Amino acid sequence: MKRQVETITFDGSTLEYSVTGKGTPILVMHGGHSNCYEEFGYTALIEQGYSIITPSRPGYGRTSKEIGKSLANACRFYVKLLDHLQINSVHVIAISAGGPSGICFASHYPERVNTLTLQSAVTKEWLTPKDTEYKLGRILFRPPVEKWIWKLISSLNNAFPRLMFRAMSPQFSTLPFQRIKSLMDEKDMEAFRKMNSRQRSGEGFLIDLSQTAAVSLKDLQAIICPVLIMQSVYDGLVDLSHAHHAKEHIRGAALCLLHSWGHLIWLGKEAAETDSILLSFLES
Image (cartoon, rainbow, N blue to C red; front, side):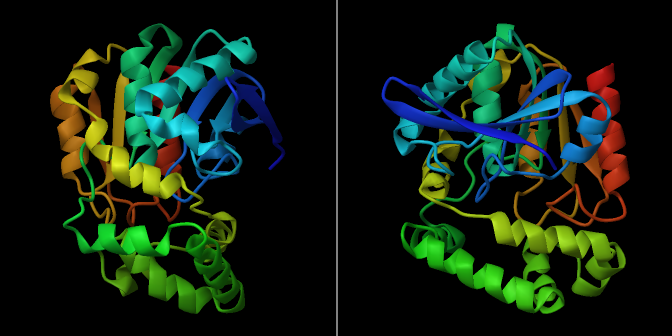
């Protein structure tokens, strides 16, 4: 996938971003442990004539962690990025832990957002300090430990892709492994391997953990653009209550519950349906 990766500096802080494809612009708020090299869902959008702009969110990639002192401050930098690219308005897609960023951006800058799509997105407080996953995340995905954790995962994943898929995929889904396996093919397992090879946490995931509670009902209720909420009923990472919460509080939002294998709705035999639903929404 061809992409142009650049960095720009505003107010002494660096923002890394990529641009892929040509056409109507989409701003993607990537999920946790990702960056501007994200790929999930991009191919279908590019083939249909969209341009995808993906900033590495604060603390990820080469983006300064200081930009992420608050969601509102990060969104101020995304506006500066659009101004730099001479883009007036965009479709916004917010993925997983990038959900709060997309919600905040659509809420605070309605004139810059044509539509908002929430995919497997966090829309309210997610993990709390009381949760085991939160405590483990604070230990395993803090610098510099995260660097070696991801190097180990990548090495094992490249050496034993099937074994690692079997070991890791259940955390993304509530389905038993044999059912997960039946919904995937070789190209999906290869995409899963590639995901683990490109992921890093930097300081971004710790910022994500600290900010999910920052999404308020006021933010959700202030969104006026068309909104599509997409999530698998078998999501094992983000509880379905997040999708229902967004549906309840965003005026006119459409909720699409998928029967894909789990959190990564761009993989598996139902992935074509994910692409089709999103494209129909954007084109309407």
